[in-house]
Image (cartoon, rainbow over all chains, first blue to last red; front, top):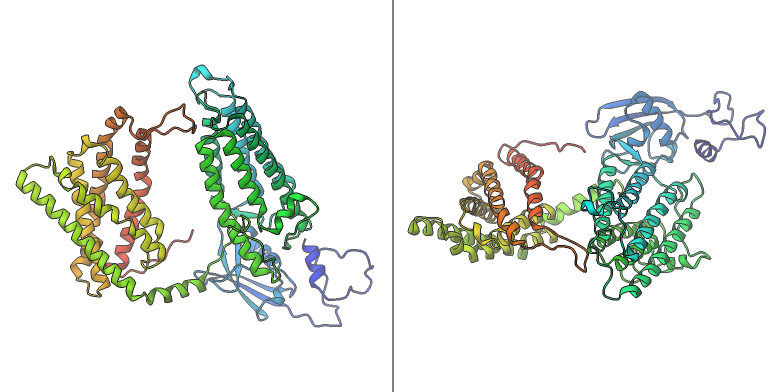
Length: 347
Length: 242
């Protein structure tokens, strides 16, 4: 990635003797022999955003150095602050600068002053996702197989006599397996990391709810849907599967918006896949489909804890969708006006 | 969580300006509200004292003031709305938790479990609440009228040091005494099988509520202590960075 940035940002011609077509080495090229342009090195000082103490002074910094490179240099002098937990900003109370920002394009003089804030211990998104999704997958199966110490001993390792319970287990497991595989192979993350405390918060949420739902669905005294019985379960299954496919289609569409290794942001549009046509009406259809899936699961199991989980998830996803919708509107002048954040025309 | 790290410092300044120009209607309403609540809790205090002086016992005291208590404590829900619409500068969640815990004690413990209404622990927390609320509402009233007598400020930021623990003790003891009756009657509980596939055991719920005092009470207490240092002693407290 550094190579890409250096090649892109530099407007110097290749030095004499270099072979065209051969990619430049990732090491900084020697500057002293340039005749065309005198290179002005920058000096960078990094101050603590709260105490204003001088933490680090870097001299002879390339003008086209990125914030990411400056973070690496800062890390060398302060090994406890790896790049992911550094927030570098121009103003102590301002926004964090991006890793891709180039030094000479920032509103700084040749001695640049940056402010540093420690974001705290960080953990990678992939790790968090794998942990928070792996838990529900395993926990639910433990309840399904009626592992000892959950229900009364006479029920240990028995199976439910209701076919909807088996169906629910398959759906739930499929859902989390899909999430795990998407984390590994589909999603392209903007940020590499998040604060460490998030993993405890997120896992409590996912694992807690999974256990609470699984306890009742797989309980020996579980009551299958009574209102419309078999028909209800069938319709619920169709809704669930439809929304799972829809959600996956959206994830693929979003992935294809972004070339590998990049962090570009573009407006998503409908593709040939009919499941993506919902982009005409909604900014975050992945959340719409997710809500639909859990609604289907609620209908299938007719279980109040599942309804709760769906409701809480809906609230959280609406908050996220509204935020994303707002960022889209701010970033793109030509954003389609017909779109709502999560529910067509409504929300 | 998928949230970005924005400080919103510009928004803070705008909010401060908004608060300084609080509308006259808001001030009038809040003044009226706080005077009414001060009066209400004063009435409660006097009714309690009169009962005890006349009857010489606390048995039956709760029953005599139950309606007034329920009225004034339930009205306090409107304070959550005050925070939500911004005419009071406190967190909605903090106010919400405090009011809800009071509503819970009144409606779901003392009102519903008749057998514990004559316990001493009930009188304990009622006395604490009455004293605290009179101090608090008169503090707000005088603040709004820009004429705060020092002894009210002193009381608000010092009495809590013993009142809080006493109140918590009264509440916890009451819940603890109520447990056997909850278990026996199975009140507010739901068992399997049922068509919603859910169960709820009020007894264990109460146990969890009691346990939750352990993390929650110190946080509120230390928050009040920090407020006290800021207001009474003029200390500048630098908030710890997370």
